[in-house]
Length: 434
Image 1 (tube, rainbow, N blue to C red):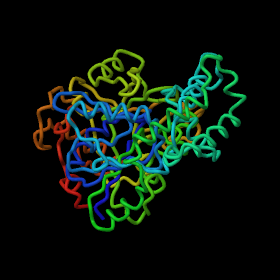
Image 2: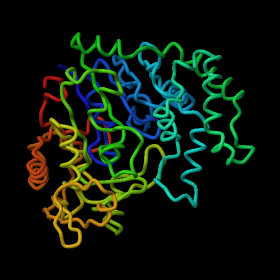
Image 3: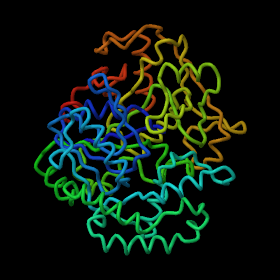
Image 4: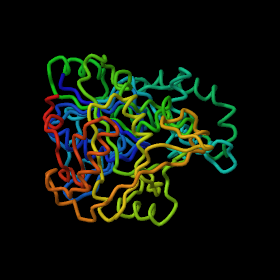
């Protein structure tokens, strides 16, 4: 079955965008299945740096159909702005190139206000969210008061659902300054107008996807964030509000498990994290600063500096287990070019106890100290290299050692920010022949 799932193996920002960009050259359809505009995939298009937040990375390839699945929460204003940025780069964005699930839930301005209020100074629970309203939108979905894309096409139904929302949230909205409180009339008018513009793109995407998969088309499912941020399996509560692992494809896109062909995980050669939450290998010193500056570790969505640390195999091993990785893509190997020694976390230590499995408790994880093994660096530039045999021997040893420890083959290695800055170890993954 020529369908491939690509998901982040760490805490997001692993470089999935450029990998999806590469793999979508052979894809007929690219599908986003979870998250919202809190995610960001950065691509290099004709020397232009392009950050995508809702639209799948396959949009840059003229032959590819992109689908935003029902598991995504959509801010229509952000989506329309993204569409215009793409058009400014002469990239076609039409219903021939992009389709949106009619079942996807809508992020409204009041969701962003509620998100920001929770993250405000003085709150007992500060998660370090992007304040894009993603969490409150998913809350509405679970509470069954959410408004979906299909509702934007009917003004009367939209108004009725907004009234239900305002009634349900009255106690929260009343806490906002009077001049910031949303108005039903204004929201109804504005979002109904969004619905008119987006109507040609909105449809039952499950029908198209299932027919495509059964007919043998190449379908690529593009994950956002990473396994460490999964609402069930991540460092709860310091997680995103959706399931980010491979199993979420079935629910977030409406396809059965038997139509999934293979799963690829994407991980950096080191580790980064944005926002709050435990991070055992975080380096709060000049080494961490060096990783950040060489790797340009600043968020595609917020611009926030990312927390940086050495590779964590305890966390990666857990991610491999719950995702069922058939292969791993190792990104940003070139960032390690300037280090004479490279450390890798192989276990944790807590109160004198050795821990080899990733804890379910964030409180426990925050008390864990990394146990490192040190590998010899290569101190040679790798960005120009395109074959594994040309890599410095110590770089090869690093890749092979990681693969053996995880018991997962390395399928591709990225050595730069561009789509073609990649070393392909196994052609099956770029040719959909798994």
